[in-house]
Length: 345
Image 1 (cartoon, rainbow, N blue to C red):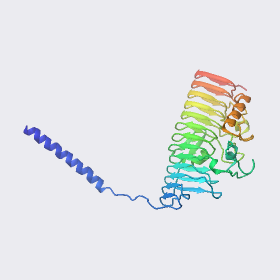
Image 2 (cartoon, rainbow, N blue to C red; image 1 turned 90 degrees about the horizontal axis):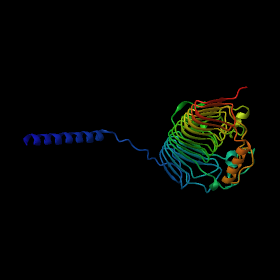
Image 3 (cartoon, rainbow, N blue to C red; image 1 turned 135 degrees about the horizontal axis):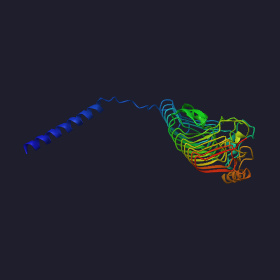
């Protein structure tokens, strides 16, 4: 009994000693002062250099800011949180959210925005106008960028941490300049270090890329990769080449799986792992870029269906399985493992 009591007292002493040590370590930790500087504007702004210009805005973080151009507008409600996070509304649009260090949004006023207004509002100017201003900015969709170094243009959503610098697909990316790899409209990119440069593209998964040289210019092949879809990891829709028919590269491609790849191809369908389809394409004209603007989302879908049917689905090459390779093919199917199809010249 005496031994048991002695052990109990010893255990209590050790527990008490540990508790005191833990408490002391917290007490000795310096208390860093939070950046509670009040920013500018009539909204909620906290952090050195923060700016919330409208009453409905929220800007929290050092340098977190929201900007509006083209005068007063009823559109508002933008939220930015994070060091250097920013929302830039070219035509006083609203309703966007940027969260994370250097999360950036640019709701522009260009030809792509006007082409895909989908009947919600009219735009100033015409096809060759340098600036297209919406008549009702409350009818223009906003954007979402969540994660460090994310970027979203009008109607786009980008979620995930981006801190990769190196080769990906047929290009080299630098997450400090994510804008260059995600500059098109209505792109959805969810996953760490994935990038999508195409209108109405969707990428879900990590280290995927939908690449193209589009830089915002009217003749910069903004139609490339239209509607391309990736689900998985380490997949690539590669469309950096710009010669000849390659300007239709990436349109209507769908990749599901891991480490699949298309290059200078359209209408490609891949399901599996390690498959490649290259140089398999035909002309596909996506509605909205080079034709009259669709009047609604339904009208755009109808136009795309017709374009795909009229072009026999472009390259129309299907690969299901693993390790299949198709080069210079059309209307072809590869099902199984390690099959090869190649057109000989």
